Length: 140
Image (cartoon, rainbow, N blue to C red; front, side):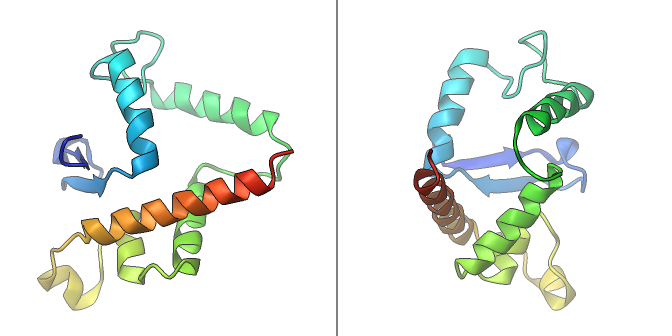
């Protein structure tokens, strides 16, 4: 939290590589509050000392989905929305790909190991502002 970077160790990554993401301002307050409440577990399960299971998380998402007056959607749609929305805000494609955890193609994948954390942070901040503005304009 001090450095403002969220790191997932390679052992917990599906690509077996560490994942680094900047922590946006609006997410920082939420994360700090959760970390104070649940110690080392960000998304606790029934036992607050262990993480929620995938099946329990899926059940929770199904309950949320059923309660919203929206067309059919899947959690993966959030990734598509982020990609499209960030691109609409002028975020460069290579930064969007890094935000999504994708490997860059061609020579970039071989020679360029930079993660554009500052650019990702700016993109996350701008996207959060866009979402909040949308919610404020559609609040009731």
